[in-house]
Image (cartoon, rainbow, N blue to C red; front, side, top):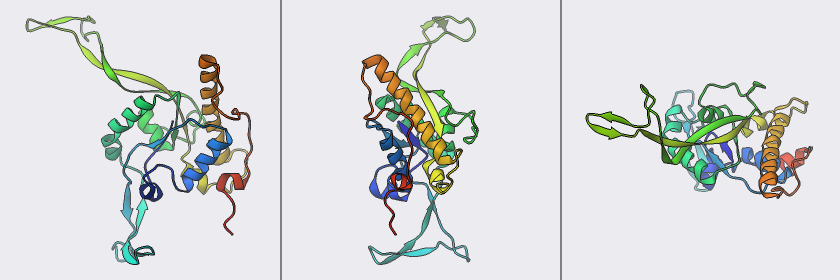
Length: 241
């Protein structure tokens, strides 16, 4: 399961996540690794954006070539903490229903929201490293009381058995946001964002493959997540020049 921060303009238009250039690079890396069974989503379901402003501080206008009408021009923004919190129940339900073997968070915002602590996505101790996260489950479980650590307590003459919502743990691997990878795509060095990104996705696929092979005796990818290399055309598609 791949989780990004929020929809952009292309996603909003299509009604699906990762439908712009960021989706192109993500889907091509996934396809190159032979992964066929995956799920894409974002922290928030709604696009976060603000209008571009002109020199006078007024919203910048542009012509919509389809409608021939002038309209406000917007830029995509990362979702705010309030937006992420408001949409968290939907995201947790998605994770619980999909029940992925491994989650790949795309970008610092997605990683922070699920790991629930500040992170530095460029740190080798964070990016590409496995973390365990918890999401609310469907049921409840009994818990011990805080003072006496008992399963049952009497309060005001009534017997009580404290319960709390159950949690389900998942393995999470943080990596870069595909948007950031696209901006740095010209970097061809060994330590480039793209090489780190593809390596992190490959690690997640290897974990998925091993799990499926050991439990069910089947290899879930068409190729296996062996070491692969990429050409610019495979990453970005044929040149438009």
